[in-house]
Each structure stands twice: as C-alpha cells, then as structure tokens.
Amino acid sequence: MRLPHDPPPEAPPPPDSADGHFRLLYGELHELARRHLSRQGGGYSLSTTTLLHEAYLNVAGRGDLQFPDRARFLGYASRAMRGLIVDYARRRSAAKRGGEFHLLPLEEGAVAEPATDADELAELSEALDQLATIDPGLAELVDLHFFCGLDFVEIAALRGVCDRTVQRDWQKARLLLHRALRPLPGDPPAA
Image (cartoon, rainbow, N blue to C red; front, side, top):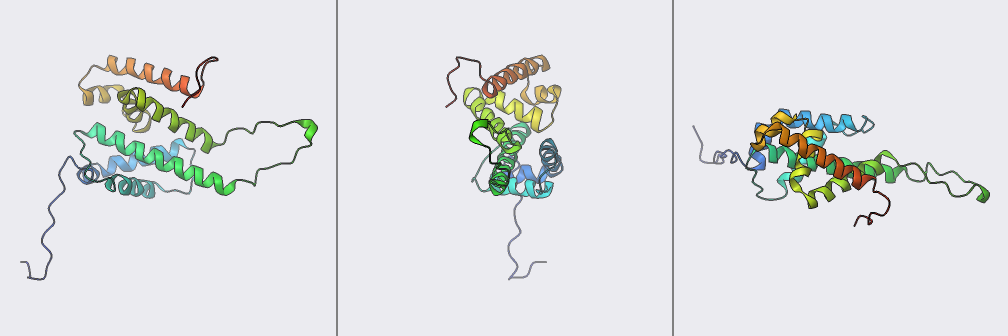
C-alpha cells in the first residue's frame, strides 16, 4: 500500500541503457575490473569495487548512451576502466615525481630513464586509441579479448562471424598495435 507522500515507484532502466547493462552484468563487470587491476601488477591502492563504481559514474555521466548488445557495452566499460587506470597511474606517478632523481656528473652524460609502468600504460592506451581511429572494430576486439577476457569463440558468437575471422582480426590488431608501440625506422611519427 502506498501512502500519499511516498515517491512513485521507480521504473527499471531500459535493458539497452548503461544502467540496465550495469545491473544485469554487475558480477561480470566486477571480474573485468579485477582483471584490469591484476594486469597492472597489483601495485595500486585502487580497489576493484572502486574502479567498477568509478567506471559506472563515468559511463552514466555521459547521458543517454544506448548499447545494442552485451559485447559493445563490455567493450565500452572496459575502455572506461582502462582510462581510469591510466589516469590513476599518471596521478600516482606525478605525485612520486622527483623522488627518483639522481645527480650525475656531466661527463657521464644524460642517460635515458627507463619507462615507468604509468608511461607504458599510457603508451598502450594511446596506441589503442590510435587503433580505434584506424579500425574501431579491431580496437573493440582488443578490449573484448585482452581486457574483458573473452575468448575468440565468444567474440565470434557476439559478432555473428566465425572464430577464424576473429583470429585473423586479432593478428591484424596485434600487428597494428606492435607497430604503433615500436615504429619501424622511417615510419612517420605518430600524431
């Protein structure tokens, strides 16, 4: 029984909305967030639940996004989590900056500092963004396979193609990412 001062019952979100997908796939998204953090070596104080909820706020804050299927939503959520981890790593690296400086005499010359985890993570993120401008389908495949943990058969079923097509696309995506991360001599610099 409703009393006159009770708020009206809330209608469930549409199933193809971000809210609908988050409610239906919360367990899967939690596992996805755990995988994202474990790939980074666990050196972060960021918790799985915090990453998931930050990704929700990020996606929900973008307005009325509609996702036609589970794969597209998982790919989008994965990119949001990856972006949050990259931002977190950059902030953490910036806070530490200065603590690793060593003074060298001039005759030893300037030695390049090895890349930090945050730098490598940022490079990978930029390479994936670059791949998304070249071929969004390949970038989505990387998100689904590498970050979401779906195998080629699952991705093929989601896309309605055979798994051999997905394997060929995976090889192409790996080649393009490798080239973006380690350009050949004579390649034009990345924009």
